Image (tube, rainbow, N blue to C red; front, side, top):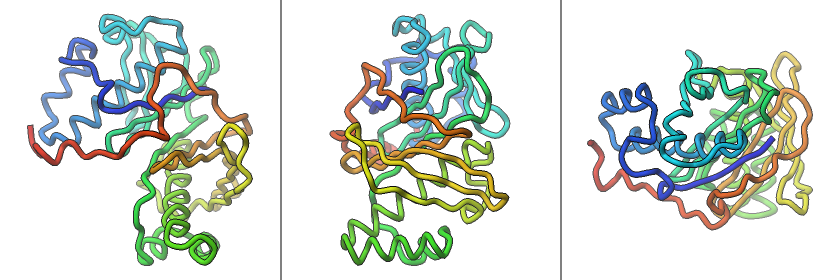
Length: 253
C-alpha cells in the first residue's frame, strides 16, 4: 500500500484536468466548501493513482483518470473509462487531503480505508455520545497523563480510526460509531506509524496504523494485516501542513 497527502495549492487551475463527468457534477455544487473538497479529493486521488500506475501528471492524463463514487460513497478509479485495477480511499480535512492506494492488480473492493482529522477540542459530550465505554476510559487516561492535548489527540484519533474502519465496511458514518471499538498501540515506529486495531460487534477485526503529524492525525484500516503504507513522492508534507478554511471568505459560488 502507498499513501500521499496534498493541500489546496495542488488543485490545478480550471476544469480541464477533470473528466467530462467529473466536471459536469461541479455545476450542482453550490457551496464553496463542498466544491473545494470535491476538487481537492480528486487532485490527491489523481496524483496518487497516476504515480502508482506509472502515468504522467499532465492535465491531459488527469482528465483520463476518473475518481467516481459507488452508491455507498466509496471512490473507485477508471482510466479511459475502464477499471484501473487499484483500490483507493480518500479523506480531506481543513484544506488537506490524503489518498491510500493499493498496488496495481490487487483490486478487491473494501480492503482499505483512510481518514484524516485535526487535533481539535472535543467535548465530554462528544466522547460520551460517539465512543464506547473502554474508549471513554482511554481518553480520560490520556487527559490525566498528557493534559488537554492528550484528551483532544485521543478523542480525534479514535474518531478517525472508526471512520477508517467504517470505510472498509463501505458504510461510513451511516453506522453508529460505537459498533466498532478501537485499541491504540502507542509504540511508534521510526517511520512515524503506530499500530491500532478496530473490532466490530460481530468480532470482525480491522488491523491498521495511525500517525500524528503536526496538527493532524491520520489513520488507516485494512481487511487483513499489512505493513504500513509507503509514502508516494510528489505530495505535501503533512507534518508541516496548516489547517485552512479558505471557503469562509466566500461561502457560496
